[in-house]
Length: 228
Length: 348
Image (tube, rainbow over all chains, first blue to last red; front, side, top):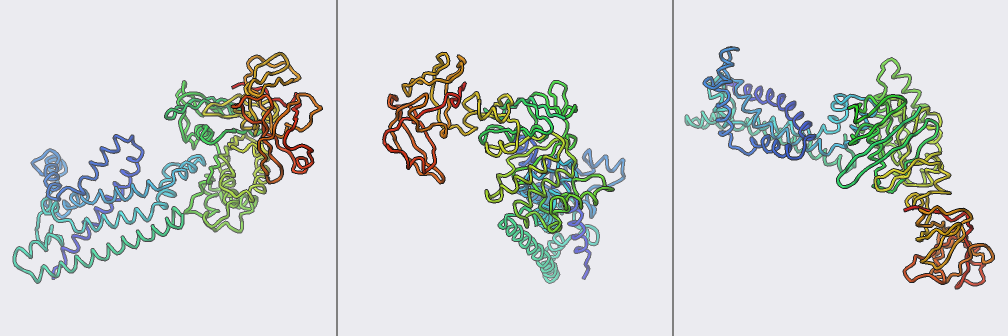
């Protein structure tokens, strides 16, 4: 059995989770400080990929990245990079669809953070960066970890936008989800089943992890603590 | 060293206006009921909140000035802030909480050890805040503030998070700590006793408006306004008309001698419950009917209706020792008197 789709799916999910970690975190942190009206609009825009069909996301991404479009054309001409139909093109798709999961869970965690802790830090002369990484992040650790796991699981299962942006080339852009579709389409049910089982196993492990993190967070809240 | 504050801020339909100066060595109490703007004032001084306009200056450094567009971030104000719930970092030990406030690495270890020793926190140095008692939490918060080497200290209701049993000992400790501190101290409280015991000067705040700073003695003997008198614990108020050295109280149908010229702007008199004495032979005798008797923990509260009182006039409240009340021959009708000096002359 060729394990390339597993390896490709895992690296795409890992890279996009790393990107979404920072993007989601900082979006959650800065958007929380904005005026209510702006916050409402941005909230809708940033959460939209969660509810849009992945094919719509894929189509919009192609509008942006295709070599016939300004950004894609520029990347091709200046950087010599083709933004679509490579293995890492899928990263664009998975970032967009998994971003809302990270953003919303991080925002929920930040909203339950006791702001006087940050105020206290500032009056003690501690920098905002120090307070963010040393107080706010540890206090919101459980929620942020849960967001990362969800984002990773979502990225791993991404099919629609990925197939449109990265296509299916065995040994190049094939992921677990696109491989399952391809094998089913070519009547290779036995081959498809193998990948289905692999996918179910990985996803189950991740959801188990989310549940563990969430129940630990609930226990902490019950105990009246904001941090573990 | 002094802290000068003169700020205005609008919050919804609440208008905060505070102006006062706190000198080093004489803690200034900001005394007011909850929701009067005391905490907002502290937050503006610390830089956590921004006033709409005004000027804040500490020891010659301008912290905030709306006209000059100066607004130092809290990090550069060197103002220590003791939060109501102490705001200790829950993910760090006591030692880490204190060490975090010391920026100079070379002195971090030695100073943390010294503060742990001074605040008797050595035994709990490795524990997290949630494992500490209320008193230990407060000591940790104080140690952490001193570790940051503040030039002024702000205390926001320092005992609101504690049982009254713990309060007294901690109040003595806090008082000792502040006595060793060389900068100005602002002490926010709604408790007049706490203010009296710990502060020499007081600024009364009422619905967002700060009155001029006065000595603590003045607040209790000559509060000047109804809101200040109320915060000083005075219970009896009656509308009054100045008449030379006396005031006429239409509601009670009496005229009381005040023993001093009564300024024309006086509109109300205040009489403390324990200044109402059952003694007919003295000055300002007021014959009354006893309306109600309330048995209190250490004394007796008696509500009196002056004989010539209008029906809607407030009752006169008297507090006296249980034994003194029991010794009175007639507990249905009673003539009380109020010493002229004990009558508080108040503006609205």
